[in-house]
Image (cartoon, rainbow, N blue to C red; front, side):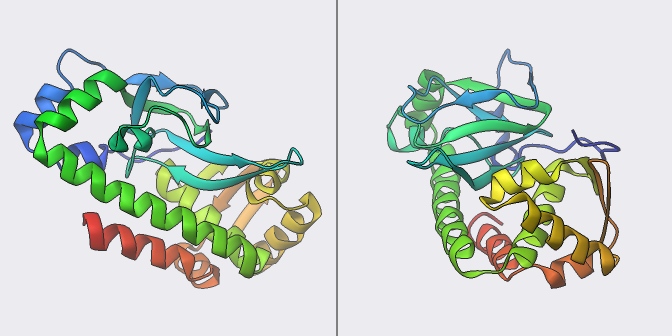
Length: 235
């Protein structure tokens, strides 16, 4: 669970909408609380709701035939869960687990579909986000195959920091190994190397990023590339 959060962010997709469209979309709604560890969907489920995180964040996980799983996406206030609805498809392609507790806007699939048909601004923003999301999932697949664990771990920690809006969070080596699809011993070695360079401090499940710029330099180029893609399409 993230701690010592900064000022509460907005969901950037909704913030990009014209004020009238945003008011209509969120009329008579309050943000919902997402609980850490809760499942928001499994592969093949009917998608009944879309979520637009405010200060929560959600892991997108691809299950494999042998029972292993791999995180292929991480959604925070820069995005949304339920991108298949943009294409008119109401079947979940991935498993969605709340990784960081917090608030989110929840919209029924029928409401979102109606507003997509009505608002050209909403269609434009969400279609661009869909492009970014697909690009980042493809990039994650290539990163998993070709990059070493230490820079991958640095990238993942930076992504988590950005979505937790905090340099401190609770995390275990077991959980990181699960998300990255590697053995725990590999995560322990990679985290120890980053700690030895005074980039992070980790003890008893509490991790703190000490040097954000240094960690960015240690990360593989996928972190900067993903940010550039988002800024280029949605910035």
